[in-house]
Length: 485
Ligand code: NAP
Ligand code: MG
Image 1 (cartoon, protein in one colour):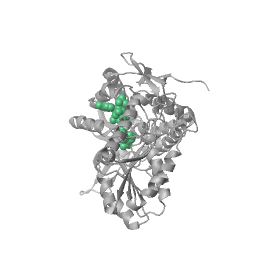
Image 2 (image 1 turned 45 degrees about the vertical axis):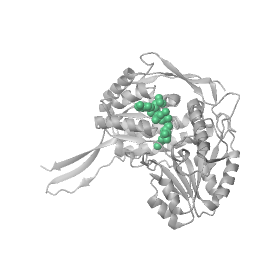
Image 3 (image 1 turned 30 degrees about the vertical axis):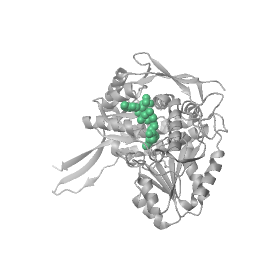
Image 4 (image 1 turned 90 degrees about the vertical axis):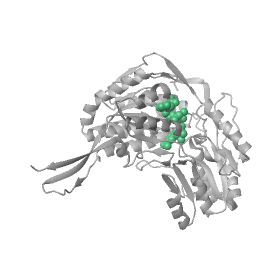
């Protein structure tokens, strides 16, 4: 196969591919083989960001007046392009993000289903008609696009997360400035290239590549930006929220998680562990919906540990381009070090390390870390409270179902949770009392392509993405009173 890498990418502003105005670039390495440079990207500045916002503002009037079903056609064409290019894009994702090729393909397929749903949403931008207190008056509500939307995305799902922002924004008639995570900008550029091929008019979607500080900050405070949709860490999300509050603009923030899988009165411990293992270690644990804590009745702990050890031992850790690989590297050297530090913290706190816990030496010096399991984890330990965002799973034994729910809720986050139980009563209690936006009974934390996605507490702010809820962020409401004469 011809080697495509490194790929040199540029910004896309007002329908043109351009370098950053300072002509500076940075390089992204392959996390499985850091000596290999895979992407060379512009290191953009506030000037580039302002140019992009102005282009998006200039394109807004015409795009917002384009009939919604025509806007949907562009999204359907984009989905076709993405399907046609999926093998190549999966390679780019694997090379710059690290996940195994088949996980990258899975992410692309999910993106295609979400885009198809979202294109349909363009034709369902409905309002209400309401009776009036007066004769001869008709009242209706109407959804209208907001204007320029800033879309800021993380590196763990480099294709599905940006499109959860860009697609509903475009469907509703907004224009967009997109800032991908610096370390997965190659996939970001590909997204924009496919929209160009799908016939999106110039200026409607603009791409600015650069750091959070040099591009993310000026983008989120720009006076022409009418809404910020952000996925990433709770720290950055909270900064964006404060800035938006000063400008009085809405935000859609999707942030961290510390998701619990509860097992209580369940007759298929092995089945539960199978589902939790994939929820814990897919994307090497770098998913906001990863299960990172198991909360289990004391009598089942030994079975859980023994099944988990088997599952962990079966992972083939390596370069995601190798079809045998089932667990890729973590995303960066810094992140590898953070995960390593958390494991040391867990040991110091007195948790019992029963599986993994070490970096893996490889010939390429890739950022590999073993799937890791701690048991005897008490709920006040840092490893039980803080988002590690790596292949680390904790086990906390409990003596009652009430205690299980209390521990599941005893974290700052509230994104997703799972409960494995044969008791209808416990299942109902879980649904009523657990403080998470998404709840899974007797299954792992996989979300579907047409269903609202979001969280409670410090995991999210604003309308849920995907599903029927996305348009609540991407449109404003007008109320119209019409007299017949
Ligand atoms: P991050 O550090 O918060 O970065 C997210 C994005 O924000 C990146 O594009 C980043 O740019 C940019 N950014 C950084 N500082 C900024 C600032 N001051 N102003 C504006 N933008 C700024 O998060 P990450 O490390 O990429 O991703 C991991 C986090 O994302 C985890 O906490 C995870 O739970 C969360 N996440 C949540 C969901 C969800 O749906 N709830 C989904 C996926 C991930 P640079 O790349 O240039 O730094
Ligand atoms: Mg970061």
